[in-house]
Amino acid sequence: MAARNPPLRHTTRNTPKRAAELCDGGSIYWVIGGAVLVRQRILNILPETESDGSPCAALVLDPALVRVEARAMRAFQGWRYLKPEDAPADLNTSQDTANMPEAMRRELAALGLL
Image (cartoon, rainbow, N blue to C red; front, side, top):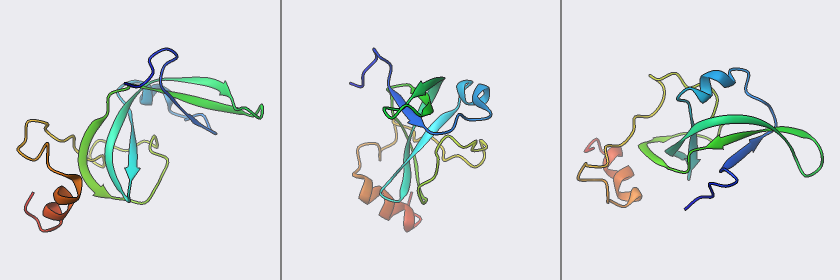
């Protein structure tokens, strides 16, 4: 279980310009092995300081990971304002494929079978 106290955070050098939008239902999307696979809701954005004294922003994250439809993508700053129509859809955990290995899910999706 991810830490709740202090809350789970991801630091970034720049404070998002549209922070209010991100805290109102926004998520960070994680690129793993060349594909977006999961997202985490952004709960808050706090000013912080790096260990070297430089300022940064802390994205306070919900510890729950939400699996999304795998989408090939190069690494990017995941909190960058994805429009809802551009964001990968959440996977329905009740699907028969919920417990399928990710490599198999990707291969079947590439063949157009999922």
